[in-house]
Image (cartoon, rainbow, N blue to C red; front, side, top):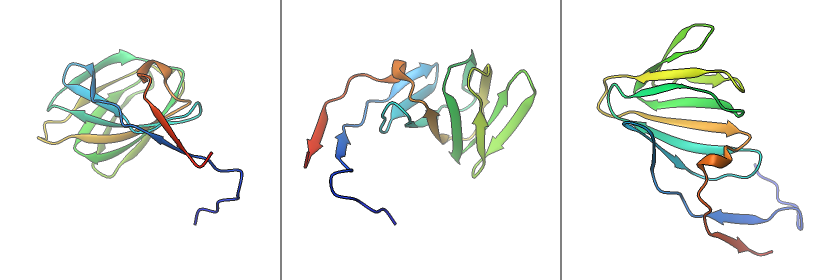
Length: 127
């Protein structure tokens, strides 16, 4: 249950971003964000590759549909539909997505990755 205390809650509607290709065959769409958190949807073509990279944000993920193999300096990890994962801040990682025809992941970056944001129009209600 969400409890709203008058004066402490402000609804902010954010127009969804467009799909943005972040690696060949891998697209990301920002769902919402503030300074602390950014949920995104990821969709990928079969066998798409995210080359090694890192960012200051922690990356929490949930596999909606499909699979991927993540590689970090610690090891390789296979995730499939229904699995969750966490990639730590500044941890270099790469991914090879599975061969499924539909691949979708939900990821949450904490804090938000400012470089992924194209300034959307914000609509404030009941300020």
